[in-house]
Length: 138
Image (cartoon, rainbow, N blue to C red; front, side):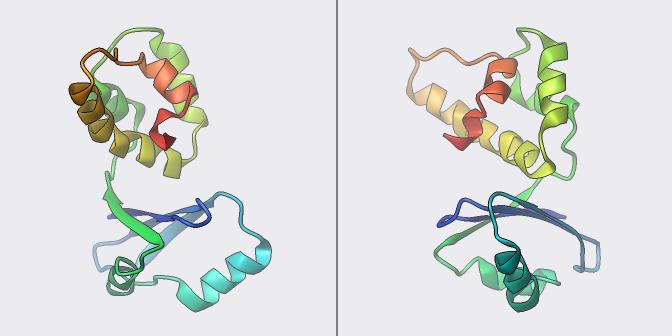
């Protein structure tokens, strides 16, 4: 199970992967954190287990979302469902993204599609443009 935690105050993301027993097996920081902040996080608040991660959901400044296990370009391409533009360039852009950003890009597709539905005069971006402009951060 994969979870993406975003600190709303700092904009920092941390990707966590848990095994079937609920133990953390991988984490990846993304964003600007000082070494001291990273150490404090690791020692004070690290969610070693899924039960500890559940407590994070109650914090106002933290957003916790469960994300797709598969973050391949194929999953993105199929979920985005606008197969126009240069697929090879989009694939290179995808490969250059950190895993946390890939997860955010995939998870935001639903929100982006809702926005397009509510604004029918706005045309959907090519996948390459969506990736290049990192539109999931808007």
